[in-house]
Length: 189
Picture (tube, rainbow, N blue to C red):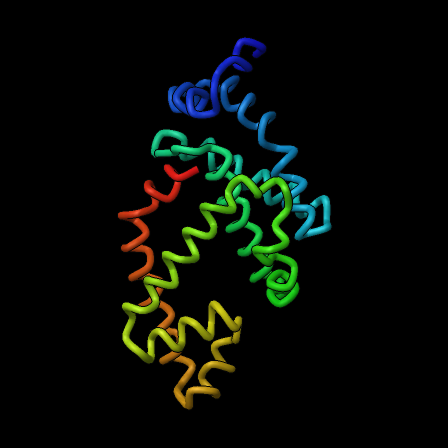
């Protein structure tokens, strides 16, 4: 496995796509500690952090053939961030998460992708200006003010189902738009 230390992360992904487990092991070894520290700063539960990282790396291996990655470390950081967000949402600790994860206080493990995060935030802000007014209001209340669907429905005097529809519409449009630009965002790093 020592020969793999001379290769870049991107070259290792190429080897990994052919089923090279040693290349995957080297990527794991290079990235695990930094991702663990970042994750543990937000979720201070070692078992949960290990589960999150295991799920990300298992997914990474299982989907290796379809991966189009331009910056492995940034890709894994974003994947871990999404997996943590899913965990937190499922555990109903969303408010604690939003307090702990603020752009100004990102850990050193993600400092290198701060530009990418800022670009993504600018992209999403620009995206929201193109949404219909009610859809934009619902999306911003959900994602910026972190209100529940019930709270949004109450504030805007609409049904929860309408809130869900607006959020689904906004997220679908965002996914379509991100599909065309995600490679560009990863290329920045």
